[in-house]
Image (cartoon, rainbow, N blue to C red; front, side, top):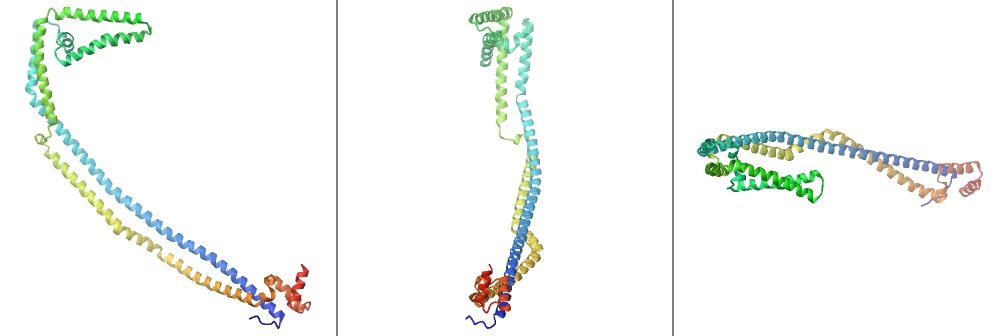
Length: 362
């Protein structure tokens, strides 16, 4: 309840003191709030730094653990690769030796047949060129491969050569092309007839005897190919004595399996145990500092609460005891001084007169 004023000067002095105290408390409250904000940010930053340090350390330790085991696994895989390569090399060598062994009789027979063919041609004075595969393909073809060689020869001589010559000349005229073909047929056809007259006709009987020998060689070669293909497709490796390589490969595979299992166990242990230990160690290193900062923050919060309460009480007191008489307009230290000067000097007998006089000065 508002009390009547008995001493205006004392009233104004008390009002000024309370207004100044209210302003002081307001300033303290603002300062404490800023300090509270700064300290809260510092605590959050310290906690964030601890969390980042934990995550970084765990990441690095995990990467190092993986790298160590991966290095060992990589070495094991390289040794396993080399062991398998040695086994494959030994197997290929065994296949070659087996092929050579199982086809040795046929190859020896072919060698003897080639010798008979050479002797036959020498005895009958047949030119050595007639023993070649291309000669028999051109003049006495019998097998599919020889007919294919004959076809290729015809295409080259009577298509590729004349047409290629036509393109090189650059004269895009039908007569030029016809002339080139005429010359080509004349040259290659004449050459074919010439060779035939000089070799095939006079030595036909010897060439046919030679063809019979070639047939035997051809048959033996087919048998050699069949044997070779059969051996290469054979999945049974027991005949090549590869047990020593298989044992080494099995041992290396077992070592790799053990290393991989150790890696899995190590990572699991790190994830379930070591990681927590690392986190606790890093947290404990900063625990005292964070606790001290949080304690300071608690003290600051309590102080802020006290100042806030005191300011609220002072504001209510000023509002209740002075604002009804002076209003918000004169609840300022400088204006309270002006009112006090009017009262003390006797220029005004009460607050209303003093306030009116101050307003007139404006």
